[in-house]
Image (tube, rainbow, N blue to C red; front, side, top):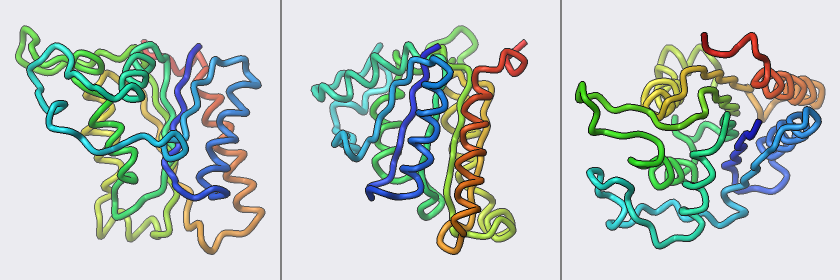
Length: 203
């Protein structure tokens, strides 16, 4: 099984980074072929150039070799894991740019289907999204409507073919104790391991 794990946090030593490493370690302990990407460390350029905005082409061209490599890899993954903070109800810009530049027509979905509806193309049917937040759950739900759930659960992942999404939010991080963080890391490992459970496969 081949799983892509993506971190979007710019600060070395962040709790997001610890979650990222915990997921990677757990999956490798289970003999998974892990494709780990710290998008900031890789220098992934999130800025979408004009040449990549044509949606009717078979595959939008890119002169960026890193973008091309990510496109080739994501098409061959069995599952996806995204680790990022909640910033203004959005993923960090580097991950938003990754979505816009990598999950493109001809790679992640196609528009010209018989019934006129877009069709997801990724073989990765499962995804795990791990978020950190400093917003209490009630406020996130009642005042903001949980925008990250809408982004991942409605706008992005179903569009590209993911049918099994688990999203976990660890909050609130800034006032969390060492014991809470240890528990969260253990929980992240459990959710990562569940990606391999055949009982959770689509029927």
